[in-house]
Length: 328
Image (cartoon, rainbow, N blue to C red; front, top):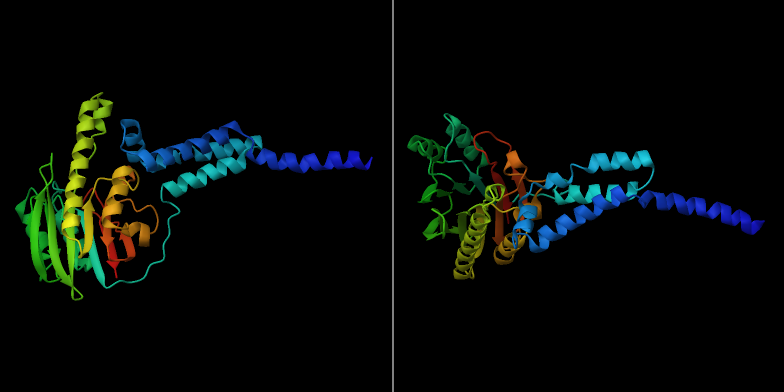
């Protein structure tokens, strides 16, 4: 009888624990999330399917979570697996990202100001630049249609040196020692390199706007165009790598609209060359700089500098949001 009582009591507890995990729906969702993030991190951009995974808005993989959780609660099975999938998807989307923040003596703002600014938006952007109080301001798509708009932005930064190269502009209130620009292949853009003096040492600042992967070509069935845009981007990254090698020995900052989500081969390649991402080091939340698609594609990477605070500013004016970073 004692043996019988033991047999009757034990399986109930075991089964209850098993039910927490036992659900095909929950496990399918968990494995889907794991597979998506593993592929996008390890082989994103190597082939067009993983290119889509790397560039898809990360919130897509979180959308099924409420239904899966409700299903498992209603069935009373698989809730633990569903919760694990939900938390992993939220982590991958950056919703759980949190880093301690402290002030830093060097302030940098990078901002794609949108060449086709609507009437009156230049004044909004100018107020943002002024309020940021940054030592370095890096603008992309600054070849504004109305020349008066650029003058409005310049007037907001009195005392700053202005250096331009096609559609990128760098403003510096640090002493400028030299500057040069490098052509980006398959792109009517330049990379702007500005060398400044900060705290007695040379700092090389790279302002870049990389081309985008033409995902719209996939919808049109034009895989050749998609491949061309991918190949062009790889060539543009090689230009950045050559500049980094040329500036060996200097502290180095790369910032701008890199049109690259924070995953995949190109992103890892940039991290390996230029150092950590400021948002990874000192940001909070998802850090979406392109809010219409909930993507983080504007970055600041640094070598021999440590980001102490990174924040995406929620301001009007452009289709991008500016990224403000403090360094030590």
